Image (cartoon, rainbow, N blue to C red; front, side, top):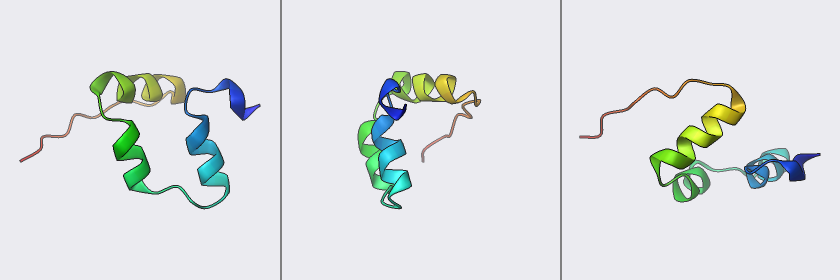
Length: 51
């Protein structure tokens, strides 16, 4: 079931209690990737201003 998702790596790592913020930061490195994941999950993306 999880294999059908583009973010399946997150699901497997999360299930194994091995998902780290660094994993997500490394792979979600473009706004398009963030927007795609948010769309699939059905959540809104809140822009964050980096200083």
